[in-house]
Amino acid sequence: MLNVKHLTFSYAKTPVLKDLSFKVQQGEHLAVIGESGSGKSTLLKVLYGEYDVNFGNIYWKDTEILGPKHNLVIGYDFMKYVAQEFDLMPFTSVEENIGKFLSNFFPKEKKERTAELLEVVELTAFSKTKVKTLSGGQKQRVALARALAKQPEIILLDEPFSHIDNFKKQTLRRNVFKYLKSKNITCIVATHDKNDILGFADNIIVLNNNQIEAYDTPEALYKTPKTPLIASFFDEFNVIDNQIVYAHQLKVVEASDLKATIITSYFKGNFYLVEADLNGEKVFFESLILLQKNQNIYLKIEL
Ligand code: ADP
Ligand code: MG
Image 1 (cartoon, rainbow, N blue to C red):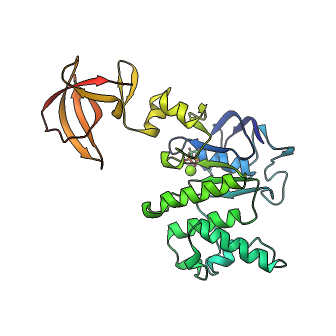
Image 2 (cartoon, protein in one colour):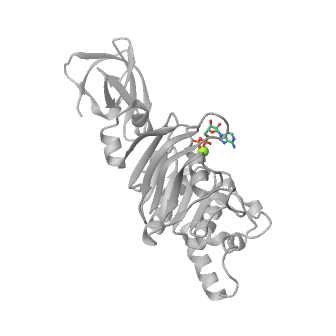
Image 3 (cartoon, rainbow, N blue to C red):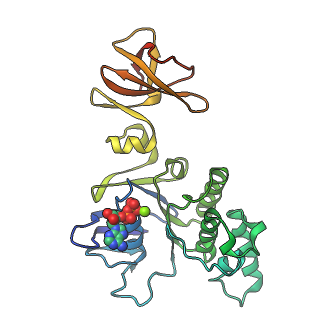
């Protein structure tokens, strides 16, 4: 188990992380979300031991994670970290990058393990390709596979799919998270993409104003978002009478007290996201049919 107690960290005077406490069980998948600059990457780096904390403690099981003041070499064998800016060996092949930390004394095992990981990140066809010729997304997949090579007990992933195109993203996410679960590897994923979380994460930490604004399951946070920030992470939403209402919870009805005028509609595939004016305020709702600009409609909240 990872146990973070009263963690406070600052680069300069003002803390970026203020008094964070949380636990992550073995095999658990924890997502860390928050706006850009909220400290997601900093948290992962501190957990990895890249910086010394100002206050508090971090434990993995009985080992205290300590920073560079205490360790000549940053990091621990049981933990891997894939940074937002991945750091690969550009002039060697994909296969060699992945196998970099695997012993040459076990050539058969090394080969099997590399092949297994190439499959997880769907780069089997590129095993002999030099990393420098790969795209950003492919490099990110190599970095992921390399971090998994030695099977850490815990892995820290910083926006792990941010460079990967939509064609590959869905499958890759499923492959990677399924793999981590099957090996009971604890993972902490910093992300601003709800798709990295829904269906995968066990728990979510929301970082805001240097603190943990919320900690709960994805389902609980989605269903009852305590703040607009949390709602905005999941979907388009409105605040009507101090109540957070997702766009899909606002329905067009024959008549109601909520009379709105259509401003514009956005094609979203199986629905239109409609922007309308409700008593001088903008509201968003979903409609299966295309509604005309300036048309008047009535809305009803259905939670
Ligand atoms: P996120 O990953 O959520 O976008 P970061 O952890 O990168 O946020 O940044 C949190 C805050 O810390 C930001 O205000 C950022 O400018 C600052 N920061 C990040 N890295 C450094 C650094 N190496 N030195 C000083 N300040 C930093
Ligand atoms: Mg970041």
